[in-house]
Image (cartoon, rainbow, N blue to C red; front, side, top):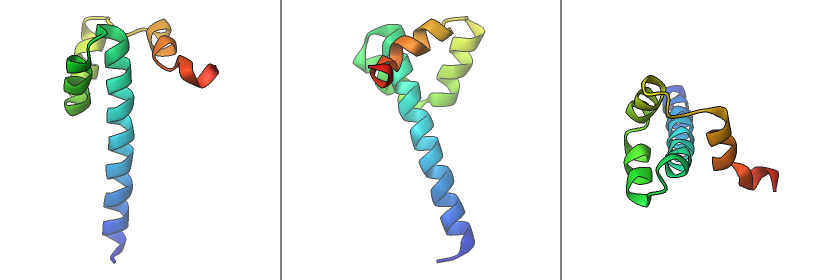
Length: 70
């Protein structure tokens, strides 16, 4: 196993975690499983749209990850 394979695997894992978090935030915004899956699949585009249209904010992110705080 070469060094580039392990680096590539690390970045794939990071992107997967980023996409999962994007899907969770997408569900909090839209309350739709369909749009959460679309946001998971197209994570960078979802974030670009949310930031341009000002649909994402800190309270929405806190609501999406409220299971961490209990």
